[in-house]
Length: 159
Image (cartoon, rainbow, N blue to C red; front, side, top):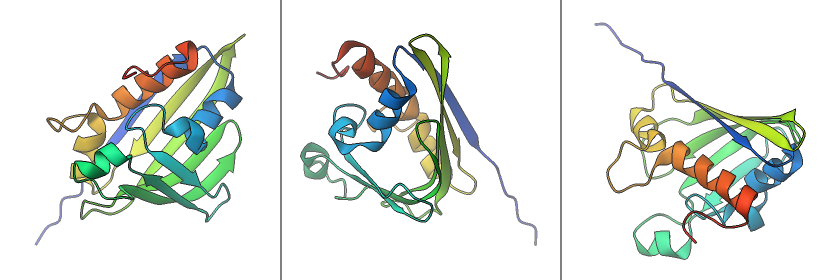
């Protein structure tokens, strides 16, 4: 018997006219996370071993999404530059994946945000976060585009 293991890593980088602290806050503070992407409320216990949970919006719950669609554990925290956590879609029967946010100021008033999602052994999660599932949103590309739009204009792409 042989076992095949595939490694899938998705990397996204976006440049945002915002400070690293503004980007950090938009990723980690629920008053920001409900304004872009899938518009859920993120809850972080920002310490190694701390819990992460994303709460689905009322609209997503009405469409059948569980109240907590994503959960995980904080692995590394270096505000406002780096956050490493596990990330598990609760509606899928797949193992937790590893998600890293890296924020760097690249020039005066402009910062880069790099999101690296290591999806070993989680092909359904990889398809979801890549935006490959019809009718399920655009994955990380859409979320990060919306985050950039929100921080630069004050409005979500969906507003």
